[in-house]
Amino acid sequence: MVRIGVIAAALAASASAAGTLHDGFNAQQAYAYTARIAGYGERWPGSPGHRKTEDLIHQVLQQDGARVEADDFTASTPRGPVAVHNIIGKFHVTADPKQKIFILAGHYDTLFQPGFLGANDGASSTAILLAFADALAGQKTKMQIWLVWTDLEEAINAFDENDGLYGSRHLAQKLAANGTTARVRGFFLLDMIGDKDLGVARESGSDRGLQDYITRAARQLGYGQYFFQYSMEIIDDHVPFLHAGVPAVDVVDAMYGRMGPQFDSMGEFHHANTDTMDKVSQRSLEVVGRTILLTVEMLDG
Ligand SMILES: [Zn+2]
Image 1 (cartoon, rainbow, N blue to C red):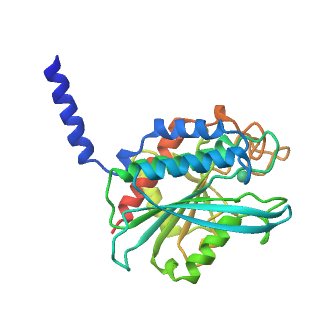
Image 2: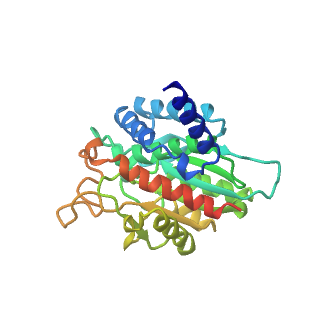
Image 3: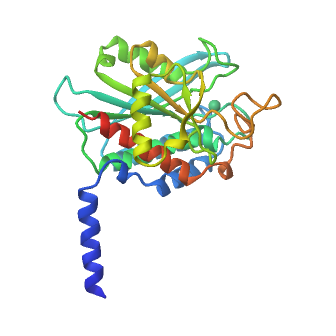
């Protein structure tokens, strides 16, 4: 009995040492992170839930050995000045000034709306990035991988060129100004990917070549049916990066619950206080998490 246990443990250890980035993705942990973050309550900038989410991100990044950077500024908004904190965790940074960079991003703020918990819209994207941090800690890549938690993605009133995407607009401009964008091989934005009824949109403004890599990775894992079965144009945190010349894809489930004229254009649970944990599944996090990490492996060179 004891002997078998020891052999099994040794085999498990060697399998994980020889494993891959996508096999290191822990969907159960991603789901647990999602529940924990949704449990913090409303997470608009300045709220206690927002602060707790920032603390969790910093704690996981520290534990996973990332190089942590802040992109802090004050945004002028229709509510007045708002302190915005983008958080960046960098993995596998070498001394090579030409080393390519790949960015995986998602927003961690929620709407300024009383009672809005954003289990899918906010918590799932924050959580999948935390699970990526855990996977990256166990595997080396040639590219530097940046995990970026954007802040104040949500519009105060309605999305236009001056409202919404505050954090991503600031960061994209900063990286363009200091020349970093030229080194960025790609940018994937994760948004609302915890939806139990998963269907990732083919966002029509996104980079088609990178979408094709995602398709290949998904098919290889048997997840092809969950990706790109419908097209939609979506304004999201990838847009400022596209404008800065970075190949970017919005990996977004844009049909959240029933669709129809009586509902929000992205489904009945979108920006509704019914965006709660019962609409999120571990399986969806697993499908997206493994597919995205396999795509990164394919692009790593
Ligand atoms: Zn939203």
